[in-house]
Amino acid sequence: MAETMFDIVVGFLLYLPVNFFVLPYFTNGIDEYSVATMLTISVIYSSIAIARKYLIRRWFVNKNLTKTLQNLTKFIK
Image (cartoon, rainbow, N blue to C red; front, side, top):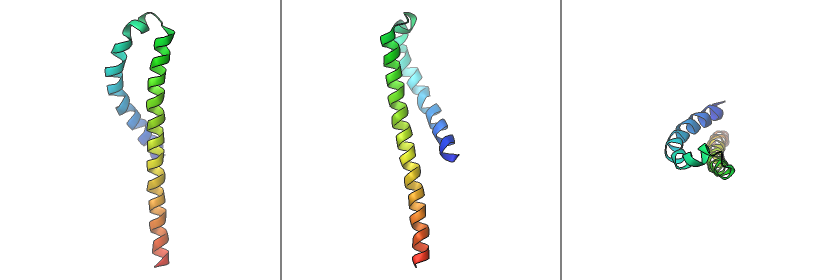
C-alpha cells in the first residue's frame, strides 16, 4: 500500500511540470486531432511512467532487501 501511494504522489508531482512544459508544444496538433500528435504525447507519457514505475519498484525492493538482511544479521550475531 505504501508503494502504491508513493507512486501516485510522485506521478502527480512529476506530471504537473510535464503538463506545463510539454503540452503547449502540441496545441496545434491537438486542435487538429492529429494522430501523430496523439501518438507522440502517448509515447512521452508512457516513457515517463515506465521509468517512474521501474525506479520506484527497484527502490522499494532494495529498501525491503536491506531491511531483511539487517534482520538476518541480528540472528547470526
